[in-house]
Length: 176
Image 1 (cartoon, rainbow, N blue to C red):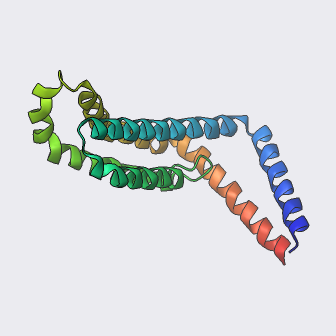
Image 2 (spheres, rainbow, N blue to C red):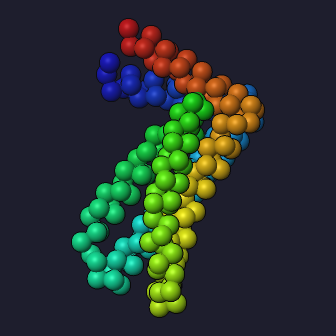
């Protein structure tokens, strides 16, 4: 397939997507809502990492910088994979596991967090970072529930998934 044919196919698929959204405006709104939720979580994670890096600089613990940046990149990658705005709802089930592991981390680190409470007046940024870390599992759980529990949300996600499968089949047929 030539570059021109691929471009023409991409344009055709984009037109079909836009027509699908015109035919189903509620699903279009659902995709926008999912995209907004994902982007808010991406922004939350970036903010958390930036604040953590500033805290590390204040504490002169810059040996953690590479690990924090690596963790951020991996978290952003997984958010984009499992919270694909045009994907099916079953992929969102992994967010429950993610929330559960973060609840586990919160429980494991609770005593350390409690021990640092007396120092929060001297280092308010530490309190902000700790609050954000404590908030993460609750945000993930709320997001997972919102995306997977209401039958209406699952149905719209299934329609999106079916449209994506049809699009892939069309692309395969056009390649032949």
